[in-house]
Image 1 (cartoon, chains in turn cyan, blue):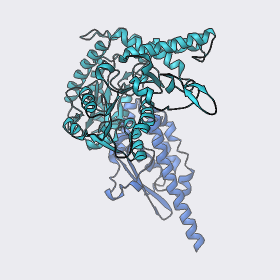
Image 2: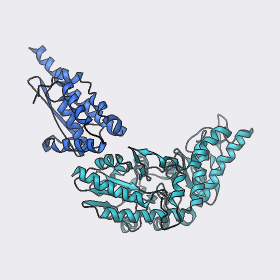
Image 3: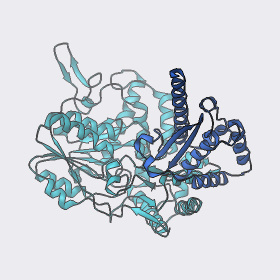
Image 4: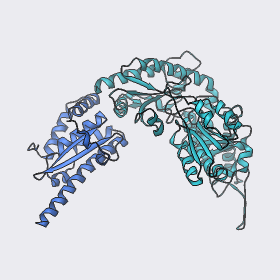
Length: 411
Length: 150
């Protein structure tokens, strides 16, 4: 396996991901569905096994050795996550099930308290359904209004309209950092500064940015940031919600139960301090602990190196796909993460998905949970290739060759 | 368009045709070819009411009943699905409601289609079969009512 023109040795990286050795339809797996979920390095798998074989226990209140070891490992992930997003304190890092739960938590707590009739929430036309529906539900309940920043023909936000939409009625701006369907990197710093000037809070959906960009919630100055471990080489069922301390402290609780309380009587319950106030019940201990192995993998590999490698793949794939007759790349923003969405004249994405799968190539086809965005482009869906640190230039060539073969069969 | 063959005979012919292919590439090419040759469905039939639920791509299915036999027509915006529905039509069209309702359609397993397609897509294929059987059942009920009425 080749070393690319940067600091990533894909041979060494790939050897850490056992699944990349497997065959699909008698061909070596080419996994290009990383925006949906990334594969897991051996260290993450080992951490899961190790937890269950050596220190499985419920955390935080146990006094025995196993409980203490499990608690220490669980809290070590919080420290690693704090460093990963550069949160000012560990209390501001709340574990969730994933990005979707993080957004729903903010909508159900901060949103319920702060949003009232006549208020406005701004989202963008390129949001994932999980950053649309919770706000729609909240707006319906409160009599508030949802405003949408439009997307231009190359898949960038129309910032002029965004600035016009902002007003004293705006209470929240909830936008995606990197589009899962197009790869567009949005100018979130500009959005946050303008929103704050208008007196609004900002939630950044970092599901797709956390794997590719350096995340610094202090430099961004966002009020909330959400992401998912499983798109970061970590296990499924774990996410991080960052919120500014003052906001988190003032928010009402999300779910009631164990862990999140300080004292319970039938007359009154006092709540635990941050971050436990928002972590009711026994958390996903094993997966949170294993998530640290994923964060360590990213730290050792280096975010800059990962990003640089992915850009090389993105540029190569873009160049190769552009040469295919009838293929149109959807989303041509100047700043893009390693996602390529495309449509082919006269060819349904589903056929592309099936025929590439038959060549061992895993792509995603469909609307990518962004039906309103697909409607903006007047298409029902696209085929999408998304790259991660373990992908190679050879694989972009296999993708191109695979597409040419599929098109020849279909047309 | 009764071919005079039983459903099982047509199924057997498909299984034999597929046994000639060495690779899935060839099988897909054959399925795509069937899709391309499926007669175009008139645009008036491409309504939401005629859409088969459970398919990832749009599949429209219409049925008619003539002289005791059910005839199917279908279309899809995706070519492989169109090829698959074409096979189902070849097998089931021109038979009585009872024959269609009793069809086991083992050929889908035998040609390896169910195993080869991702779960979501084989579910779509099963949804098509279900819809075809629903039509057969509806025609059968209607037929019985008419007879009871006489």
